[in-house]
Image 1 (tube, helix red, strand yellow):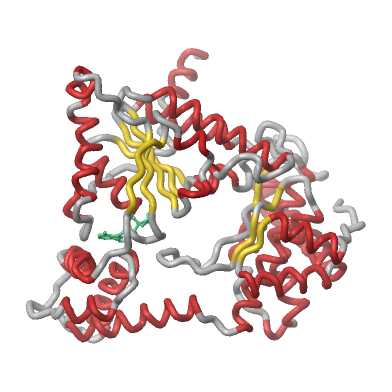
Image 2 (image 1 turned 45 degrees about the vertical axis):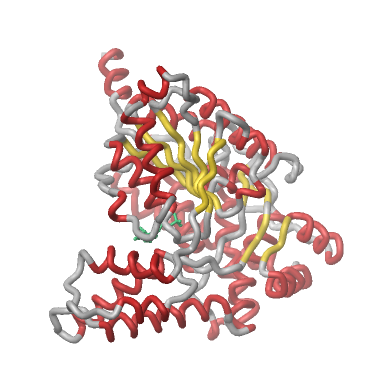
Length: 465
Ligand code: ADP
């Protein structure tokens, strides 16, 4: 039976494969000349033999550069779709996020899967999250990330020139990438995707209108002229919102007016993101500062690389979380203490909100992190890490589930108390981080270190039982 089990394991479903990717170049509008370059990538797959025979090297990696929402992901999918190959994707920020500490092993399994299912496209979103120049980050967080980056380099080298697995990565910051990544044979081909111009915007609007019941006399020129500076993601959204508007009014066709109204809403959203009131900025900054300060106090799992509240177009959330690097995981296994620390950090935004804005003024900005904490608390219980329920046997008994939830709640409560303690004891530092965040929108590690030196950092005494 050992063999059978092994075979079953070998057949496990690929984790990073995206099924049903059916994007074609005709789904990506406003590309102009870039299309030729992308068609060539497709040829690496379809006519690989021809390239090899003529001694033309097939690149291991292609870098798509451009602002968020210009269609980099869509293009990578279209390459896979046109070539008829499998599409594997991962966001590089996943390499460095919580529960990782195993970035390198994720990279390995990603490429393992891609190879087993070759030919395939491996798409790495936000490559800069893991591919920033080495040496910029000191300490073990940097080491962890370096291990991930090194693994990626090894994988890229393994496929160079073979044309069976081609990596496409996207980045908004090609300038900060580690030179080793852009060396010949790795990401040696850069394609810049600009924001669409007037014509490009018309084409993008039309591509998205194609799938919707639109009136025949839509004035695309007008809408294009109203959407200067917008990217594909925003234009796609405009068509969606217009369709909803039509449905709401029980009409059967989208009109120019629907699109105009939707464009105005999108525009206002953009402005909101750019020109939030000082209060809004502070609220967002408080949320991020709380996680950062809590992580500084509990340095067992995270290493802060940078914090930002800068809005990013084309993303659902207008701002990025504190970038947290996992460090002291033992081969990716979570220890009891690190999980408790993680929960505390995730609850810090909620604790800060209550302290700074008071119970009546609470926002829901912390909802996401609070939810992370809840999930982690359950994991803590199911992992058999609690004093009362250690060992595997207990949590499989279904009549204990309720009890487990109650225990999880207790953990959440004591972590919340500890988060509150951290926030209260570091008010000066918190205020300083919030102020500087609102001022500069982004803080790098050096800024944070400076603020800690200036205002001190008080770590919690209260142990968690
Ligand atoms: P990026 O990866 O550059 O951040 P995405 O590829 O994720 O952007 O774009 C998000 C969505 O916006 C796409 O799924 C698509 O609906 C729309 N979009 C973006 N650019 C284009 C384009 N050039 N043509 C058509 N749709 C686009």
